[in-house]
Image (cartoon, rainbow, N blue to C red; front, side, top):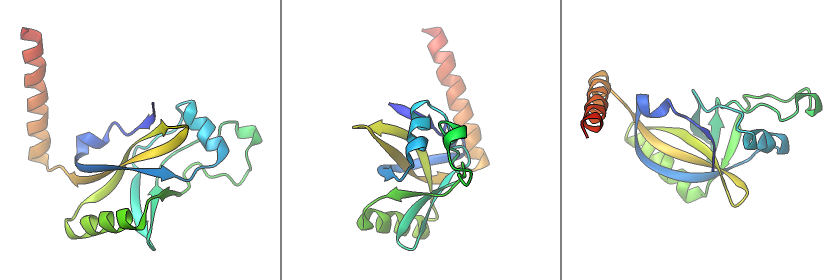
Length: 144
């Protein structure tokens, strides 16, 4: 069950490879995500010091009155990946000029997981071709 999805990602980037990662959250953040609150727009994943972090995501508190005053809705959250996965992602990101972005946050066996994508930025002509393809698909559906 998808909780939060980054819908704008596929308009700007081509997704080359995906993998799943656990995410380190607080209790009231999990409750908030179960209510389908939050956003991944403009977020990305960075690798620093052998660890992966989700930066720029917005997850509000479940009950703002009961959360600590120091709670930051845009805080950096650690992703739970093995060293081999982090090394592979870091190598591909650095050597192939790609970026890491979260596609969605979802529930798997009552745990919140993050779908991580290795992406390449679309050029302007690629975006135009993509729009033309979508228009032609719609026209084909209407003719059927």
